[in-house]
Length: 328
Length: 266
Image (cartoon, rainbow over all chains, first blue to last red):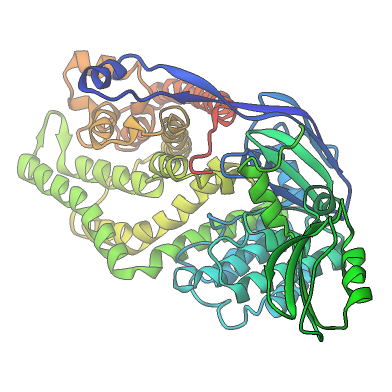
C-alpha cells in the first residue's frame, strides 16, 4: 500500500554569521550548507496497519510525512502510496489520504466547524449519504455536539484537534497520517483521540501512520514501530519485539510474610531492601520475569507483589541519549 | 463537473460569510475603499465641470472611474500576501495536502470576500453617482459585448499576474512584490487612476509594452469611446497573448515552486 524505497531529502540551509561586516556581506552573498533531513529510508506498509513513526526532534519524521502526502518532493528515491507517486500526482494522492498536523489547523478560523466540514465535502466530492453518516458518527464518537456549530476561534485546543481529526477522515481515506495529533492536549482529550483512531482502524481498516513524542500514543495505538534518528532508519518491526529486544528491564517489588528476606539470585540486583520487602531489578534476557517471581515464590510466602517493566518511552530515552546503541 | 461547481459555489459562499463575521471591519474597509472613487469624481468635476478639456468630458471620466472601481473591486486579490503568510508560518502544508489547486482556492476565497464590498458598498455608491450625474453607454451592442469580454479577460490576467508575484514567496519567503510601493508602479502603468490617453506620449507608448493597461484600461477606454472597435480587436489580441503568457508562467512557476517548497516550522 505504501512503498518507500531509498528516499532522501536534502535542504539548503543558509548560514547566518554574526558581526556587522558579515551582516553587510550577507546582503550580497550568503553561504549555505546542505542538510540531509532524511537519508535512504526504506519501508513498506500494508493496508490496515497501525504504525508508530518515532524519533527525536529533527529526526526527519515530519519531512517523511510531508513527502508521503505529496507536499515535499524527495531529493532521491521512490515513494508510492496506493500506486501513486505523491509529489507527481499531488491532488490524486490527496483524495486517498487524510492528514492531521498537530500544530496546524484545517478549519476555517472564523467560521463554525460545520462550515469547514461542508467545504471539505465539496472539495473531496464526498457522496451526500457518506458525508452525513460520517459527520453523525464522528460527532458522536468525538463528542463534538456541543461545539460543531461554534466558530473555530472559540474552541479549546482539544476541541480543535477533535474537529481536525474528524475532517481528515470525512472522505473515508484508506490512509491517514497523523503528525503529532496529541501535542498539547490534556489526558482526557488524548484518550478520546486514541480511542477514535483505534475505532476507525477497526471499522474501516484505515492504515494509520502516527508520529508523536508521547509514547503512550504508540503503546496504545500501534502494532508496528519505525524508529528514525538523524534522518536514518534504526528500527522497523513489531512493537512488542522492540520492547523485548531493547528493553527487557523489569523492577519487582515483593513483600513476604516472614520478617527476613535474603536475595540470593545472581542475575538479580537489589534496588531497595527492608525487613520483609525487597525491590529487585533484572533483565529478561538474563532471567525471565516469570522465573524471577518463581524464585521468590519458591523460597518465601509472598503477600504482595508489584511489577514495572521498561516502557517504550524509557527505551527510546536510552536510545536518544546513547545509553542503548542501535545498529542502522 | 457538477461537484466542482458545488465546490466553487461553497468556497465563494464561505469567503463571503467569513467577511460578514466582522461586520464593522468589513463595512469600514469597504467604505474607505470607495473614498478613492469619490475623490477622483470630485477632482474630475472640479477640473472638467460641465465642459470638456483634453477632449474629455466629466461624464466620460465618471463612467471611466466607476467601471475601473467596480472591475478592481471584483478581483481585489490578496493572494500575494496570502501565499507569503502561508509560506512564512508553514500552513502551506495544509493546502498542499488537499485535492485542490492553491490558485483556485485563493481566487474563490478572495472572490467571495470581494462580493461584500462590490454589492454592499461599491454598487450602491456607483448607482447613486450614476443617478446624479449620468453614465456613458456605447450606442453599439458590439462595443458593449467586446468591452465585457475584455474586462473578464483583464480580471483573469490581473489575478494571474498577482498570483505569480505571490509565488515569489516560495523562493524569497518575504515577498517584496506585495508592498504598497510596488502596487503604485502597477497603478501608474495600468492607467487605473489617470487614464492613459492623458499621459505624455512617451509614457503612453511605454505602457503598450507592459501588461498593465490590458487589465482594465483597454476595455474601459473602448466602452467610453476613447478607443475604436478596430483598435480594440488589436488590444483583445494582445490581451490574449498576455493571458497565454501569464497562464504559462503561472504553471511553470507553480511547478518549480512546489519543488522548492520548504515547510517552515516542522
